[in-house]
Image (cartoon, rainbow, N blue to C red; front, side):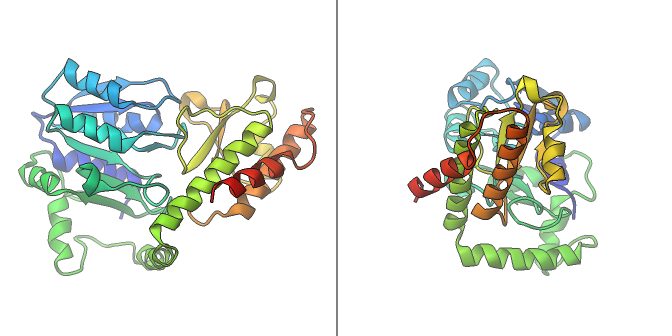
Length: 321
């Protein structure tokens, strides 16, 4: 029972020792969180920082590992919520395996349930996620999955841990229990959400997110706006706010029309907005928010024909079958 950050902290506290050397790759607010957690636990960490909006490549990963070998763990963000970027995790995991025996630890908070993540097949050791994203539940539950290699590291771990001690959680699972008081109401909701995902089929869920994301990106471009992410995630679409519209509170205007979109975080505050595709969202939801966005832009003086977003969205959904 915790937020996604709780699962991230559990990963750091359980798989590392104080003598370990960790590598984090940070291209957004949540990538930075891996580095902050490692530092909080006194672990030696090399924090590689990329420009926000850019995606880590396998070639960059190989360069990092050549520059300084001997890492105990590499911490990655599959879908960076603050920028709308997704990395090619499969290819990057292969690159790591070619050069290192380091554990591969992944923030999958907005990717699990929204896009493929084949932990075993890709050789990923730890994946963390949270209930409020692809699992369609309120926040308050976090999830962590560990490979056999990761469990060996957990047993060897020597960092301080109590509430986040995965050994306690694993032991309690034998009795279908938890080591501490769980959020029972959230678990009941999760049970129903998982039944919905199983009924739809996870491949169909991934396809739905891909289709909605592609169509939304097409509609945004048709409205004359620019995407922020060079390699977009299917969990959300991050859109640049044009200079001439930054004083107009675009996010607030959408809210006044009944639509909640997220603004930018940290250094991106006021510079981007983000449209979610996670969980229950369907074509009707996307079309409604895009129509509202089109109306906001038209009132701001953009010469947009009525139905511009709808036309681009429909064209793409027809193509993505």
